Length: 414
Image 1 (cartoon, rainbow, N blue to C red):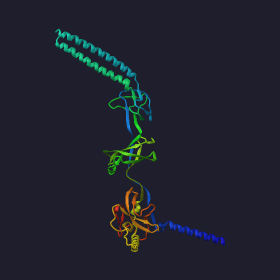
Image 2: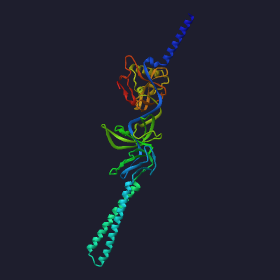
Image 3: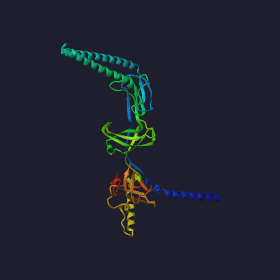
């Protein structure tokens, strides 16, 4: 029996201790309050958008002549240098064309020399008055015609020679990486009014650009040089940074929404970013680091009228008991002069577990948290976000209006 009694006493003591410490640590549970602590952290005000990654300094390599591709010497993702041979067009037909044009050039030169000889000899006869001026002019025109024919044949010869010696070998105009290849060995290419693209070479994949669409309602906040952070679906845990390079003035309407293209420059140091990837972009309009902040729900909270009156009566009694007679400040009393635009009331639980209120200076917000400051504001301060009360509502009913975030009085529903 003694052992049973001792066990019962020990269990009773443990239960009483647990109950005591639970009540002491969680007074908000007993009063039906939900709390949010003032924390230290960062606040970012951003404008979100989406865009497409593109390479910078992209060059499309084509051909200036028609023919059959005999060799392709590079492939996708190959690194190339300036003047490196990319492909060779079959020169068999070019050699034949070159020989034919050389023969035509020699024949044209011979005709020109013959016409010149006839003109010179007949000019001597004209000076001796053995032929008429009409005959001499006919020889001169024949010479000029053969001279023009020779020039045309020579130009055609030079064209065929360039095709054989220069254009039959396709070279890289820049140093970079091959990101696209639209040619195969044995394929016939035809040069016409629009030059066919055989290779696409990017100058440098370590520098990328994002073409983002920004809604007309947000474009006024975007400026050149503004910092940007973005992610891609392929690497959702990697956060990349960039800067606004250009805000284009030409609007584009997508689904009846006016958008503007914003060009963003970004570094691709790890070489993971690829052309064509979709980027989720955040334009950082405002950024503050390591500041005191509180949940916006705490700044919007207003207790019932009974709680308000009880807190005000307590503060009034404290002022009457103040023997010095020094008036409290508005942030300490919770009443006084009209609050400024960047002030808001904050209801909290003090160290003794009692409800109190203060005015705080509000700053930047990201829609979830708001920057706050004040004499009594400190990290870990327990602020009230909601309260269950019997009878009256937990929000201001108009009998006692406290200003909300931005200095607007909060009355009735928000």
